[in-house]
Length: 300
Image (cartoon, rainbow, N blue to C red; front, side, top):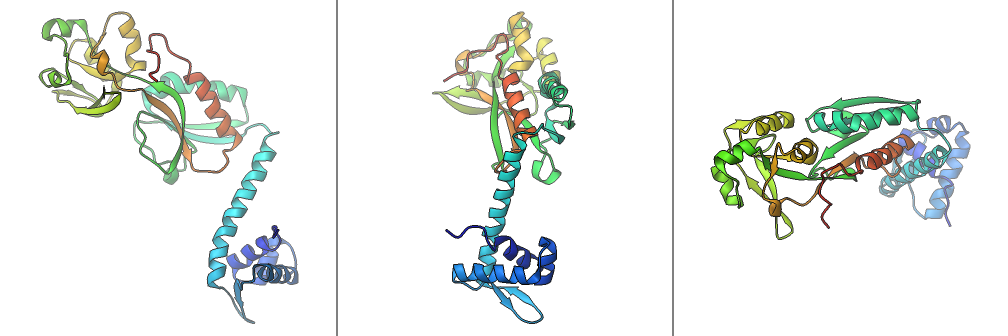
């Protein structure tokens, strides 16, 4: 079995293109670095470096091998950190983002509870309805709602999320209730961040475009308009469940309610999560996964 001998030395030389600088980086002698790289080439039966008295350059095999070695080093270092961190307390800064209303109501209290338990963790939380680019903007974690589109990120399901089509009794007394999706065209629809509403058909999600003379990108504003009898709305459970329970809103087209979407934790693709992120995700999953009063039993 080949083992690790020579890999760190080869990467250092390939990165600096200089044996002396590689030796300084590793805190060893130039002769040791040269000897380890030569032994590595001998084991591989392949030349990795072109050497002259004045310069060092990578061969084609060296370029290919360097990419693999860097991934091996990263995985090794992350594994060592992961095992070492098992016995240590989570600490350091967490930069995370979440939608405004959901964050204020549900995420912030849970995160504050987590920080109280782990005082060495600090937080930078951005509550915004803008879709933040975690990779380019340097965030560790995002809490997202509904359907996901970014395949560059790892997703962990934290909790179910249900959408309700509903209206106030005062609206239904004047305009009646829709019984089919096609009847939505003659109703006043309160449009939020999207005019595409989600429904169920044959156990699958179908998307339906609605029209309305009232539009606002705030879920709370949509809810207020619905409670005043301005029209139909489709909102997540955390907006409407208390009002449904009190009879201030009525759920419509129950047989067309869309399949459960979800609340997700998203983070960049890394082989090992740091303890602070892993523990926070577990804490959020436990807290957000508790069913709220009035929620339907998850389908499936």
